[in-house]
Length: 370
Image 1 (cartoon, rainbow, N blue to C red):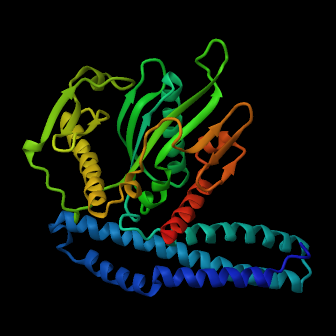
Image 2: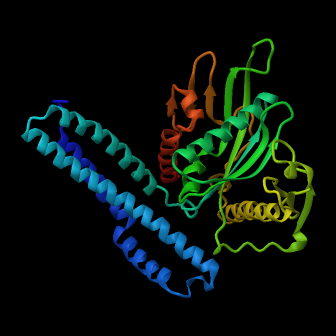
């Protein structure tokens, strides 16, 4: 601790925060907040519900971003005062507390700095995550369910609401596929680096001979549609099928034809929703997913970079982006960034921030090199 140069560390943090302030354009953010606050105060705001939701949602997002920035700036200033007082009073305990706080602040600043790298056209959107079991039989289905739980746990740790649209259960264990939304600003920009093929190596719990098994699952991430996105789908381009929901659920879910499958005939895109009791609710939710997928396809065709929006996902040998190895050793390693963790249990329990930050930095570097 004696060798720690608090002044240099704090000066570096302040310099980074200044850069973040410029990228975020905090002054403009405050002006927009003032303007939106006036709109929210208008008595006729909710006459136009779509606009009201857009205005209140944008205001909430900006307030959250500004509060995050100002709180972190205040913590850095308070740290400087804490160190100064501790040295004046020769207080070793407070200096030790200051060192721990410095570590926490550095981690928070790094996370905010990564957020400034999310400047893509759709990065600020909420995210739709689609997981599909790949090669590997029942182990692949089990792995797909492990990945779904991993992303849900990560979301819960950050207080991000998750809305499950569809879960297709496998016969023996696990899931064939699942579709869910993560409702948080920048969820798409953050989670889009997860798109690709994930590979699991372990002793199979489903093999009575205890052999090692390799299995695969595909993760697809697309941005959630907003009111300003124009996706017009003629009725004749959609085929609607209803069927009885399968898998765990309440009695009314499993005994009525409430599940809905939509097929976009021109592109062959198929989405399903079965998690609501009402067929009408399921159809509305399925339409949200379908429009998000069609938006991704439309923009990818316009810009000729489908991989940037949804990933080129095959879920088989040779194209995996991350390995989860549980035997003969334990490690989770991203093959693009080389970031790794020796604690797979923590990763499967939602400890993903390190992988996400490394992926975002890697993507920014790849974009600059191209």
